[in-house]
Picture 1 (tube, each protein chain N blue to C red):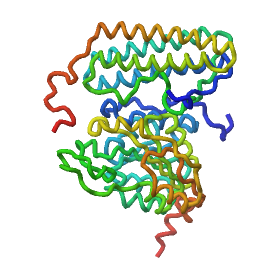
Picture 2 (picture 1 turned 135 degrees about the vertical axis):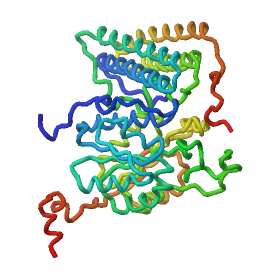
Picture 3 (picture 1 turned 90 degrees about the vertical axis):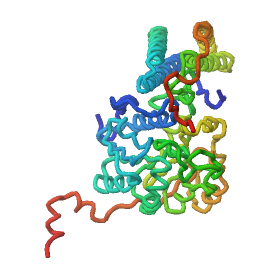
Length: 173
Length: 277
C-alpha cells in the first residue's frame, strides 16, 4: 500500500472512525463477492463470503463499542479517506466464478495483511502517542486474523482451477 | 432542512435490490461502487438523478441503481440523455456506456454530444473489448491483440477517445481507473459538478476476455500535470498520453448549451401556438 494512500490520522476518534470504516468496507466487499458467487451458482463460496462479511461486521461493532463515549469519526464520508481502495477490502479483480475456498481464503489473507500493514505503519508514524498505541493494538488483532487465515488455508488446500462440469469456460478457444 | 443543503446519504441508498450479473472480477463492480459513492457525496435524492445507458455489460448499470434509469438502444444513450437533460434541466443526468457502445455504435453521438456541450456527465467503462458478445475487438483494442475472433490482431490504430472528446468540444475530460474506486468517485463528482458536457473515461478491466488487464493496476499513474483550461495545451498532453494517466486532463470554461425555448417546452399549453397555421 502506498504512503499516499494513508489518510492523516490526527486523533483517537479519527482512528476509531477509520478502523470502523475499514471493517465496514471489508464487510461490504465480502457481501458483493457473496452475491457474485450466488449469481454464478458457486454456493459454497457464497456461504464462505457471507461468513467473512459477518465476521467483519462483528469487528466493526466491536470498534464502535471500544470507542464508547469518545465516538467514531466519519471515516471519510461517503467516498472514504483512501485514494485507491480500503486496506482490508478484498481484491475484486482476483474473483472468478470458479474460484475455490482456497482462492477465497487467499483473498482474505491478502486483505488482512494490508490491514496489518496499515496499522503497523501508523503505529510507527510520527503521530500522537495515543493514536500510535491504539494503532498498535489494532495491529495485534490483525496479526491474529492473518494467523487465522493461514490456519484455514491448511484446512482448504488448492483445488482445481475450473470446477468440473464447465465444458465451455469463458475465454476458451 | 434547507432546500440547498445536501442530504446526508449513504452509497447503499442509491443501490437497487437487483444484483449485478457481471462476471466476478469485472471492473464494472468498482464503477458501480464509485458511482453510488459519488451520488452519496453529492447528496442528491435518487429522484433527482437519472442514469441512462445503451447496450453492453457496462450499460446494465442503471438497473443496479435506484435513481431514474433508462437502459436504451445500442449506441444511443447520449441521444436519450441529451433529450432528458433538455426536457428536465432540474434532473442531474449521468450517461453510462462502454467502449463498443460509446465509441463504435455510438461514435457519431459521442462527437455531437461533445460539440453540443449539454450539461451532463458521460462515463465510459473502457475495457478494450466487446465482453458481452464474447470478446470481439472494440475501437480501443490494441492492434496486435490476438484472439480466435481476430487472429493476429486487427492491425488497426486504436480510437483515442480523450483526444476526440477534446477536439469535439467536451468541457471536461478525465480518466479514471476502476480499481481506485474512491478516486473514481471523486472524479465523477467533479464531472457532475462541472458545467457542460463532462467526459470521464474509466479503465475498467474485463478479466474474462482480457485477463491481461489485471496488470492495469501497476500501469496507471496520476497525471503529472495540473488540469488546464487551454485546449491547445490539453491536446499536446493527450497526444503524447500513454493511456494510463489518471485525473482531470482538461477543465474548460465553455458555457453549456441552453435551449432558447426551454421555458416554452416546459409549458404544454404553449404547444398549441406552435401548430397555428
